[in-house]
Amino acid sequence: MFSKKLKISLLSGAVAAIAAVLPMQQANATVGQLPACIGTYKCGMAGAGLSIASDPTAAAINPALIGRMDNSAIISMGWFHADVERDLTGTYANTAGGKQKSNTDDFVNGSLGVNYRLDDNYAVNLSVYPGGGGATNWTNSRTGAGTSTSADRKINWKMFNAQLGVAYTPNTMSSYGLGLVLGYATMRTDSKDNQFNVDGNWAKDTAKGAGFQLGGQWQLNDDISVAADYHSKVWFERFKKYTSTFNSTVDRPETYSAGIAWKVQPATTLALDFKHVNEGSVDTISNPSAQGCNVKECGGFGWTNINMIMVGVEHDATDDLTVRAGYSYNNSPIDNEAVFANVLFPAIVEQHFTAGLTYAVMDGMELGISGYVTPTKRQRESGAGDAFSTGMAGSTLWHRQYGSQVSLKYDF
Image (cartoon, rainbow, N blue to C red; front, side):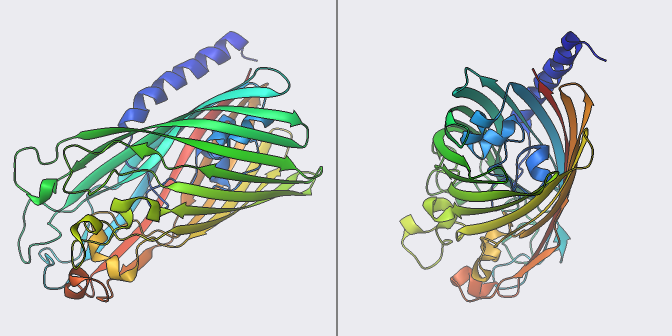
């Protein structure tokens, strides 16, 4: 048995390590520009579990769960690999090099959370977790037919969030939570002001943001619980170095979520969640690209809203071992007439298959692991959109991912 002092030392060292990595973490989007899940517990269930108080980072998806947990802390560290390919064709497309793969394909991420009970009715929480983003780095430019330029070929957008939350639990049947969300984002692209070879291209730009989250969780009976959550936009500052590239602030979109968990057997719980991502609330994400519209309504990615369904199961195999599995589906936010406009940001993944487990290695301490894989998603430019779409009909993107993470949780 390890002493409590040693447990705290191990946790403190891991927290310090992940806190150093978080600001440097790479883009980590798997659902549009948002992470599909946070932490090993939820990621083992494909993001499901809006009403399950699994670990302190669960507050990041529903602050009401703060009131369902005792004093605990958790850290997670993860990695994922993205295989993104393109095959461009058309009037404006750069077909040099033929079919090619993005050179940016490995990403790290992490999260941490601490939950603390003030009394029987109130608890507080601090969670730090990925906010999303995206990155590609093509060998050849996207536009400029038959050329091999150093511009219009890469982007790196990173976000992470910190939430300070509080929950009120008036009775054993309900809990309500509020979170203040602070965001930090960095941006680099070689498309500065649409001038590809000027001083300052690929310059690092930063923006800070803020938002809030409201959640509720209700225990209907011993076996069934339900939950609902609203996450506001994280309203970011305007990127100052890329004001022409992005025609508005690049905010984290608002989301609406609802979920139910049912203990189908004493050791087995099934969870079903639904999430709506309002991409239309962010102008530069939802606006069409730069052809055939008013300048204030152009220059965007042309995204549509995302609807996501998540199904997960967890089973207590033994007193120490819990195993999890899950599946999620979301529509691609990129319509077929906006494929070419999103060659730099091809967020077309739609399905996630996941699995994970946690194991109590000693009293009050659990190790966790989760992993996921996405089937290859292929999407082809229809040519039914603006002039870019019409001129690039047939351009095709492929995207698949796989990744894993590990965690250490300590109850104190």
